[in-house]
Image (cartoon, rainbow over all chains, first blue to last red):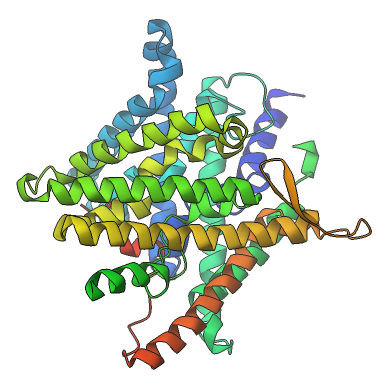
Length: 206
Length: 225
């Protein structure tokens, strides 16, 4: 398998086959909380793609250059990663506010929320510990692989969130039984959407 | 006493953490493939919720407002550590099944959300009622979901090595119930049933319909602070 094929498979596998929202139940809070309107979903997806890739790059470097040489990677990575991600998000927010007001307006309010989004921590953890969440990759990721993998996870998040938002906007005007109106119907719709992702499960043997 | 009873029963029905407030969903959907795992998860949540509610209500008078969230987290994390180590020692098989979700009770919206929304503003005695009601409400819903998924999906119900219910051997359960979509769909119907029940309860006690419930992290203010 050439380097490029492997990268493409990693991207597709992370985005569709192991979709973080619909096949692994990570970050469900934001999934149901934000999918009310298309505008917030687009902002959130952009912010997640942006922050997740940066966070994973930072934590990968931090893990392999600081934690592992010190021999504390096994048990100190969770607090260390949370601190790195929180600090990074804070810096990104400050930088954007000063140098790129347009971008800041588009995704500014979502940045602090993302610090507590478990998807970011999960992607950062997985890019140094593949297989932690059962991704079928027994070897350690190199830096480009970690970046591509995280990009895949973030794209999968955005794709699932946007498609679900579109469904929910339709569901609001659909005639459903009174007891199922609102939240229950969104769960059932999410289940049907998730069924589609399960169908991709054996794609390319990933 | 009537206030105590009202708070307790609100946790069970009108303000059930899973079906009405909709917080702490990730762990619920993920561990509800097996009844015994879900049951012990519920017990763990009850313990952590009651104990942290008691301690937080007890120290609420001299907790500075600015640093209350770190204080809550430290209190919750110590009780979660107790649960984590006890489960590892006494029910190792279930501890293996629950895996990462036991330590993740620390960041479970329910525990932090109740600390912030209830225990911080109420007396110790009422906080016990809130912890017990919320914890029992959580346990009932997660046990119901898990029992349904296990019986329909695998045709039997096991508890600590004993088979409690076993369907005839020709029964081949639909696999989807044990997979992720099944969890979403069944949980959707459980919420629907709860809404119908709540409407009836409200009509009986003469309470007005509330505004539509906010989904997602709505009840938990931990992230916005």
